[in-house]
Length: 316
Image (tube, rainbow, N blue to C red; front, side, top):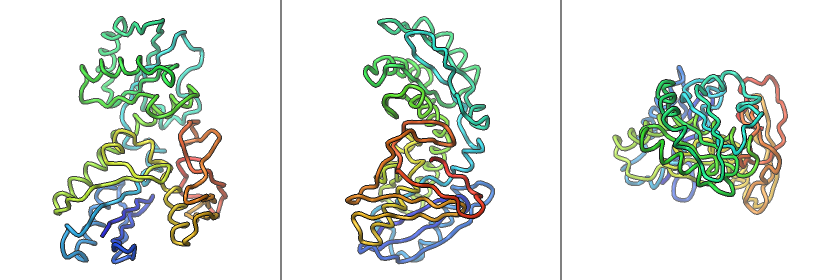
């Protein structure tokens, strides 16, 4: 058996699936006062009575896009520092086109000019003091040329990990590819989301253990594939488009079609995507997360308004 959990904007839906893919039991739990973890726990408790033994469950799968609206409003985000590594001082300021509710959480920025070799150590002591003074909870390191040579980002991360071991560091080359500003935006978003994702998934994992579950916990990502809880905590930004990816894949699976057009109707908007040989068509243009330009891999979709839009989507 498997347990699937979908965390929406207002409620948590959970199901138990048999080994043949049939629904054994289902539950719906309302999210109150932004207590997502509590709602997930209540959903799991309501399902347990349908199990003879927790060892029957081979895996728990979570669609972790639930908190998009809260994130858009700036709730639960990590206080983030940004270190930009450039060969020359850039005239383009970071966080362009960012909503204030998000940019306010980036409490420290620094631009480091690098030559043939990264002269990071001349900046390090001052940066370390300012990062501590700002009480940052996550750091994004963005090198202008890191898709071709990521040594500078690696060096900075090693230094930060040694002196600030409890603070997660996001390197931009692990998130995006070419396109400096888009990659920088994606890296900073990842750092902002790290605290919220860690708290949510750690809480769910600990609760599953207390209930006697010994199965793996998986999180769905933007491309419809799975990632481990450790990967999701390290790369939370890779889960933001998983709601549409799940819907497109799930719709095609239920229709038993390998190639088809899938329509996902939700509160306020309708998304239309294409499945080709069981893989959804990816967006080949710039993607926007909370209105911020990024180069993240997302499902290509046509977004149509449907009635009054109450729950704004994370990306387009």
